[in-house]
Each structure stands twice: as C-alpha cells, then as structure tokens.
Picture 1 (cartoon, rainbow, N blue to C red):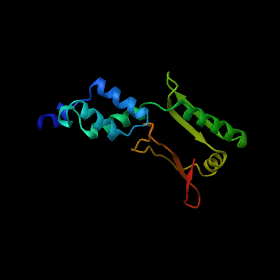
Picture 2 (picture 1 turned 180 degrees about the vertical axis):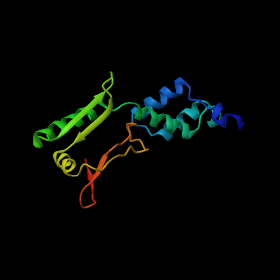
Picture 3 (picture 1 turned 30 degrees about the vertical axis):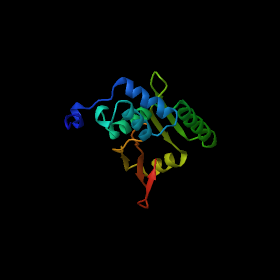
Length: 151
C-alpha cells in the first residue's frame, strides 16, 4: 500500500490530532503517542499519516500560541529596562487573543549611537521563525569604527 504514503493521501484525522495534542500536553513523547495510535488501528499502514506528520502536527500546535506568561514576562522585562534606562523605548502589539504579534525595542546606547552615526541602518528580517512562529528582525547600524551596533 504505497498510496497511503503519498503526501496527497495522508491526513491526520481530528480524533488522532486530538489524541496527539492531549498526549503531548500530558508530557508523553511524540513517538510514544504515534506508536500508541498505530497500535490502536492495527499498524502504521492503517493510521493514515507518518511519524514525521505526527511530529509536524505537534510542532505546529506548540507554535500556534505564545504562552501568556511569556508575553507577560517580556512586558515586565521591558518595563524594568525602561526604569533603568530612561531612553529605552519599546512597543508590543498583540492580537485579540493576547498573542504576541510584533515587538520593537531600542535602548539608550542604541539611540545615542544612531544620533551620532545614523547614516547606515540595516533592517534584517530573518528567514527563520522562532518557536513562536515569529521572525526575528533586529535593526543593525554601523558606528564610525565600522563595528555593528544593535539599534
């Protein structure tokens, strides 16, 4: 049965997806959840998706939302930094579910460096996404010694 290995023929049913998610949240390894599901249906060939599909599904679930504590911790950090550095500027945008969408910050030294050497700025958006499915986009400048400066 090679047909069930073709990507177009594979899919994770809602029931299996729910079991994978529940087992992952309970701390059970993805491979163990996959093995359990395959034994329940009489073998991997009857499951309808591969081990790689199971890992991808779990990773997608983990990346779907930022835990609320992470956003809260970040905002607390920015507030603390703003107290210590009165030139520290930051902004955070969240969606309707309070999930983090965008972050911007610059410290006092970065602002001073920009005022002195503001001719060169690079806005670099990384092609890789982090565990929260967000791109990293630091703004990097160059000072008069041709050294990179994080703005």
